[in-house]
Image 1 (cartoon, one colour):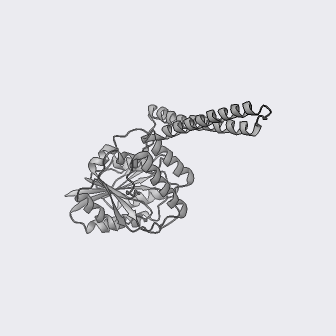
Image 2 (tube, rainbow, N blue to C red):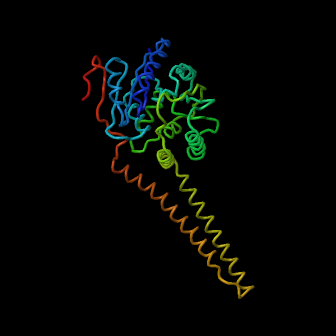
Image 3 (cartoon, rainbow, N blue to C red):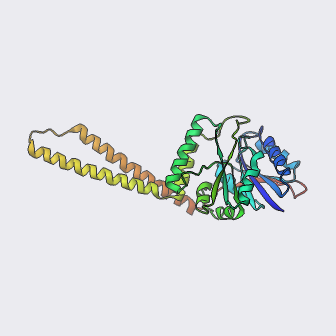
Length: 316
C-alpha cells in the first residue's frame, strides 16, 4: 500500500490545526488504497501552536511534529517537512482550514493518471484584496522570470510525486523557493479546481514586507532576468542621454543665446543616479545571497521534534 505524506507549515494556528488534521484523517479513511502520515512544522509561532502539535501527536501515531528555533518562513518549513517524509506522494496544504483536505482524492487521481505535480486552483478565493493582488502579481512575475506556463495556477495546496520532492531537497542553500524548484524539475504540472474557504481564525501572516521578501527570494535564486532587465534599462537611459546631448549641441549651434537648462540637467542627473543605484542594489542582492550561501547559512534550525510515544522517544 502506497503512503501519502501531508506536510503542513504551522504558524499561529493553535485554534485551527486540530480541525485540519481531523479533516485529513476523515478524508484518508475513505481512500482505502493509501496509507498516510502527517508532518506538522511549527515555524517559531508566537502563540501555543507547538503545544497544540504536541497534543495532536500524543494521541495520533500518524502525526509527527517539528519545531523551529526561529522563524524561517513557509518555504523553509516545507523543506524541513520534505526531509522527513516516507510517502510516495506528498501533499502540502495550509494550517488555517482554507485549503480543503476533504478534496485530496482529486489530487491523488490526477497523480495516478500521470501528472507529476498537481496544484489547486480556485474559482473564488476567500483571501483579502491585498493577498489576492499579491498572488496575481506573483503569478505574472513567475511567468516572466521562472518560465511558469501562463495557464498554470500555482497555490500553497499541491501534491507531488516523491521523485519531484527528492529533487527539490537537493537544494541545500538558504532562501529556498519551492515553486522555482518544482518548475525546474518537471513540466507535467496540472491544475485541479477545489473550493476555497474562509479562514478559521485570524488573518494571513503575509504582510507586504514578507511578500516582497518572498518575491525577491524566488526570482534572484532562480533567474538572472532581473540583471538583464536593469542592463537593458541602463542601455536605454544611456541612449536617451546621447540623444539629449546631440539635441543640446544642435540647439546651441542654431541658437547661440539658448540658455543652459538647470532643471533638465538635474532631471538627467537624477535619472542616471537613480538607475545606477538601482543596478548596484540588484547586483548587491545577488552578491549578498552568494555570500550567505558560501557561509552555509541554514535553511532552518530544528529546536525539537515530537513523535507518538509508540513510534519512538519523544524529542525534548
